[in-house]
Image 1 (cartoon, rainbow, N blue to C red):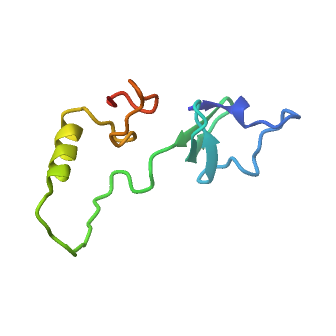
Image 2 (cartoon, rainbow, N blue to C red):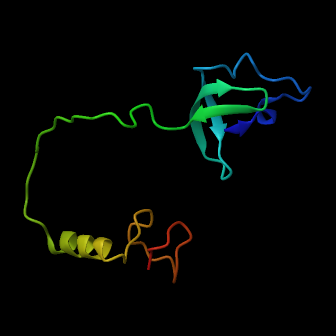
Length: 108
């Protein structure tokens, strides 16, 4: 539930042309990330929105095929060992960030 005030323009009018039940509305979170929410309900004071992915809760089936197989190299083994032991953060990809990394907590 979000305060209805968030959906008013500079003149204090509610954006009913955009914010109506069932409509997808682009929003920003408090960190500036864009997400899309579906308006579920509008009351006098609040707008209830669903920010789940449209496929959330659905059973997904994937079809794929192996295009190539090869033995793991020593470099592959080291990278996997470091990743699963918490030495490498996913966003840092093992790069040396001079004693730390601002993008993730597991980077060394």
